[in-house]
Structures are given as C-alpha cells and as structure tokens.
Image (cartoon, rainbow, N blue to C red; front, top):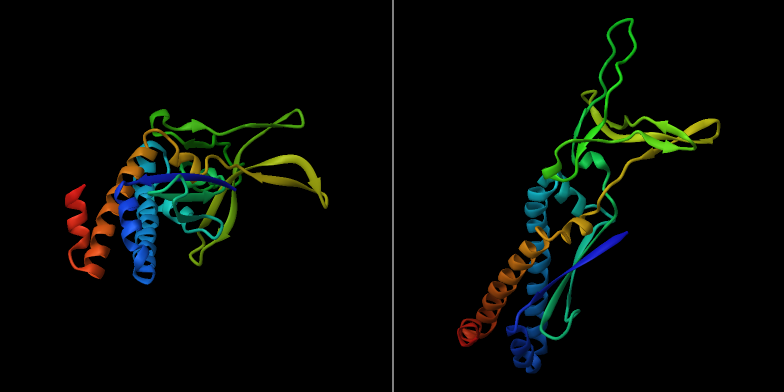
Length: 227
C-alpha cells in the first residue's frame, strides 16, 4: 500500500492556533471542519487533475479514492507548525482503470477460432495507447488477455487484463492481473501535485475565514485582512 502527502501551509494557521488556545471547544470544532474540507478538496481535485496527465478518467480515480483500502486523511502540523498535511493512500490500480482496448473480448465467428488481439492501454496521455505485454514468465512469452471478473444482469460484465503465470495450482495455471501506478504515485507528478496543493491552500484559507466568522463574528475576515 503506497501513500503520498500533500502539504498546505498558511501563515495564518499559526496566528489562529494561538488565538484559539483560550477556546479549546470552539478551536477544536473549527480545525476539524477545516481539515475535513481540506480532505474533500483533495478527493475532488485529484479526480480533476490526474486525468489531465494520465489516461485514467475522473470516475475511475474517484472510485479508486473511495475504495475500502484507499483513503484521504488530514493531520495538523505534520510538516511543522502552521501546516495541514493531507495523506493519500492506495495500492497500484488495475491497468483497465485507464483507457484501454479492447474493452470486451471479441467473439469468434461461427465455426472459427477467436481472433488474436493486442492489449493496449493509455497510462500517460502524451504517450497515447501502448501495447501491454506479452509478459515473460518462466522463459516463455505469455499473452495478455481480458479476464472476466464480474457479470451484470444484462449479460455484460467487468474485465481485467491478465496473463497466465506458468505456475500451477490444483492442476490449473495461475492468472496474474496486471497493475500499474497508484493514485499516490500520480499525485506526486510535477503537473498534478502543485495544482492540488494550490487548491488545498485556497480551501484552507476560505474555510478558516468562514469558520472564524461564524464562531467569533468577523474575526476571520479581520485576520485575513491583516496578513
């Protein structure tokens, strides 16, 4: 399971933390709301920014972030006083979460063998569609194919690119699903990470102002005007 951290730093957090020392109850509520909003922003912005560089659609990235083994969490002061750390956790994604072809196995004509096909996927948008496999295992090149993993009521289903490993279990050759980059890895890309950080900084600034104004009149607005 990989992870990546995004740091949002704002000088106002130091000042606010000092002011809220005498109001532990209100201060706790305010910072919890700010942290939750920061995490939500990372989820949304990650789904927006990754597809600009990689071949994974927004829906696939958002689904990946909402998976049981993937999460976004926030921690105050992880990189020093006055910082918000947002950690993105997740394992490598199956390659079929990216744009790929074919998306379903090709049916064979009646009385004929199914035609061979080349599995392709787009990991980086700039590179376009590239061949996936064959994979060398035990001295042999193993072709990559679409493996059914789930069927829908309408007869359709979900498929993953896989290959036969050459190893046998209970008399059958084991299959390996092909995986590639994780969301945490993609977040560190120089064209993705800075955009997310900028958005998180904006969100923290706005949310902090709003929460302080709500709890203490115009305190948030006044503080931000002083910076």
